[in-house]
Length: 546
Image (cartoon, rainbow, N blue to C red):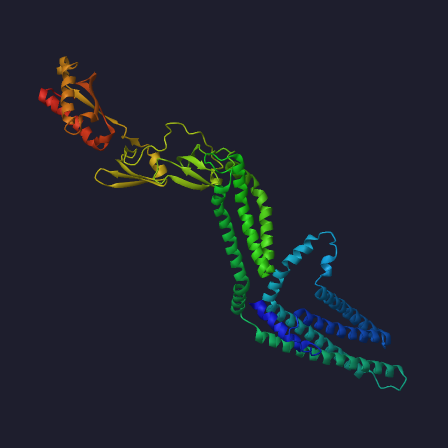
């Protein structure tokens, strides 16, 4: 919008600065004819000025006038040549400069870099113009004051010398000296007057500049407002375009996979398909950058365009330090690295199967709720995988399993995710562990079945019954008592065996194996085992050992 207003003002101001009033255009006259008419008038005026200056060169009174007229004539001749080239270009529609063969000269990187940074330097000069002008005017005031003081000292010194020279006859040395001193006095008085006038003018310009000086806040707000209204909008537009192009290009990958003959048929991707994926993803940044550059080129913002080009160049120079890392990631995506698709890895303390390897790897664990994890492929560069074997354990338990942990917790697992595991204890209390911390508790899973054991001590006075009667009685009493708590199929085995004779007691091992579905009754079954063994001893009248 600012450029449009400026162009309109320039167009409106052209008649004011032209030397002759252009004739009225004929109805239906094209813009080319109007432009050619203006160029003809300009050429005519320039030729007249050139003839005038050439005449001054030939008839100049002094060498200085001739030299000045020659310089002016050369300047007019250059403008005349440019106007004639413009006329030919508009009339023929052919730019002669474009027809000239390009000459390959020596590339001056410093000059090219300065030209690229020219708009940025110009912007910085405009922002700092006010303090620079004020400082320049202050310097001029100081210089003029020094010059005025010097001239006044010179006048004072000459006046002092004039008073010391005695009166003398005409033609004498003293008379010549006095005359010379008077001429010097006049010259320094003129210099002092000139310095005084220049000093007053410099002070006046400085006072005006100080009166027009803006505060820091005004400069910042004006600059920020101007930036937001012009370059800010261009920058936002370029960033949005980059994001849309980048995301759009990445989003088209799924559509490309459906159309690509190398990606059809499912199953494992071929090596060529993987190479195609790597190249496609690498092009996403290039497409986004080109889209942003096209936007800045279209709006004509050369400053931002130059800065973006410099940024891209810096990124390219910095990318060489990351080439080994990018090479490792490319090997993974091509399925040539230490981690392969379909194999098993341990990531963040959990086992995962690598479902796919792209710029983002997809990992799965069938034992977890929502057991799909997407991680950047760069996070896998230091890992290694192995083939998945039948019967591989993906997690120590599953949801609804009963477990006991090293910290004494016993309960049912109700939730397993890649972040947390939640256990419900008997009575309803919920206990939550970080998943890796849960594994660190060495959980014991009772779902596949479990064993309850007890040691019964009987007094040695009953040693004659130790091999047969006591084991059979204990087995019968314990089995009958357990069947009041569980179903017969849930008791897989029950054994009572003589263990050893110790001082004051005979030890008997009681071992009961249960099915996993009664794991929630584990504490009750442990207590029941002791209870019914004691009941058998009481019923038989056996004394317990110490």
